[in-house]
Length: 302
Length: 299
Image 1 (cartoon, rainbow over the protein chains, first blue to last red):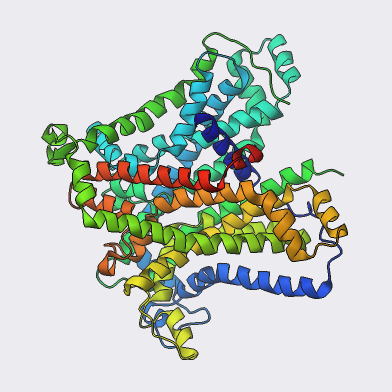
Image 2 (spheres, rainbow over the protein chains, first blue to last red):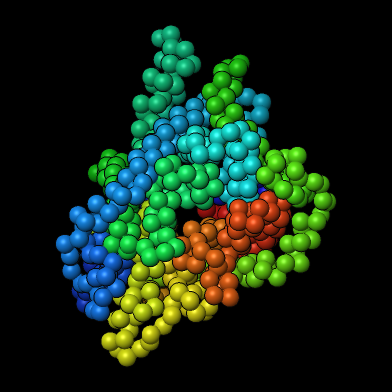
């Protein structure tokens, strides 16, 4: 069972690593019938439109006030309330929450890169007693569902006196089993053994080997992992919900939830806030996609 | 090509120390805590001292609780309602993109990933606006063709459909990308041979491509099952208290309410274990029924 689990996760990691396919890899669809191609393109365009429609609504709604959003007929184009909505947000701790989210997500990402690459390095380079157990622990850390541990975690964090503190969010986020497996896989397959031997002969100690030789060569894997960690930390909702009770410590999703409020939400402000809050992950996705495409292109046969 | 591994005394353990320390603090301790809490009951406000050992009491309580069973049923129904259309759509979309989109494939992948990387909270708020019963955009459009109005967020059945639609929308692109990745790994010669043998587009998909995709389909469905059992963010926004007749009360939502509103940490911990057992049973049953040998082929 454990071995099966490992292969599942390893494969999942492989998919994530190459999740966005590069354009230009497919010269296969060259000679298709034009009519069929047109129909399918139309279908795909409709699918893309449906997928993006809620974002369009979000964009439009963010520039209207609450009365407009629920007017008859609903707004179809941009209004003039975007500035007012942003101003309304400023009356709530929303911008502070954005800052908190950035702080937490950046800390989680940096720590997770560091911890995962250190562990992946050890698992890729060394033979030692307990290596398989360590791989198993990495898998285990991914398989334990948050709903099982959220209650005892809350209990544990309050015992530590860390309630309402950001470290209760970014430290656990640094235990990233997927990251460890991803880094181990990448280091084992992408680093030439001769390079390590040469560096050792030149007097590199093991830490210098990691810091100065291996880490710089791991950029593609690190970039992938950074994006996954950042998006995961940014969108995390359940853990902040139980760990951060005070509004001034809210992360962006918590602040959005608070805007929804029980008594008469200002829906214009809610929509503007939702729009602002999704921008960082969209940027992360675009950065990743550009990066992946570059990696793919450089590996493509010429 | 794999790096040869060598022995190097304590070095590996020094590199592994940060991971091990954090694992101990944030995985092992909460895991042990989940075991400890599941057998205890009492006032948590006074800390661990306020909790008494109650044996299997929490499990008996959970198993006798009709709301717990309803929440399990809701979770299963929502997973199926969101999962089935999601994978049928994703397979069809991936095949169409693979066959016809050529240079735009990368762009399609990015578009598909957009909902997946977007905060569930932000997007659930947009859906709530769109589905609002009196003035929501969806009902206004439906009214134009003489339908409705539908009470998407309050009618028990429609509430389930709304949450399922939101989940389906969020993950359909992700699954499309998974299937697209698997399609791109297929040997081109296979399709060409089938084409030479005179197989049409549908026949090629049904008899050549689909069997080859089976390992990825099993993996993607397994991920959907696991994710479905943990459904929390979307129902939490759309129906924070579970909605009319608790139609949107998933097990994780119930567990959260029980622990943090009702203060029953022990009961919630027991339900966490029961949900885990249900999830593992479901995933194993699914993989035994459909996934025989599929994992080996992914490898």
